[in-house]
Length: 115
Image 1 (cartoon, helix red, strand yellow):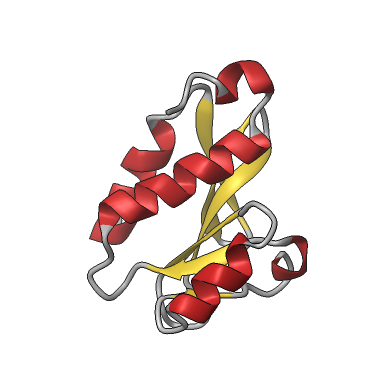
Image 2: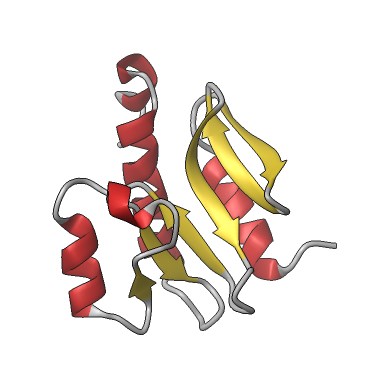
């Protein structure tokens, strides 16, 4: 049985058009047409999700709340942002960050179907 955070994140991600889940690097990744838009990570002992963010957004989020947001390794230099999920996250905010990442990754036709 998956952790509650994984179940909630999975529900948010797989609700998006043509989204799929694939295990990579030992963690679930969520993809659209095999391009990753969200990754759950547990490597540092904490649960987080990594998502693509628009230019400038990573700095704003991390500066505003460094306890919750962080620059993830490997993809942080490309503007991705990490968000902690293990300390009672605001799931509507998680969903918005995931949807925004999806819109940045998905083909325009699919992205336009997400509010």
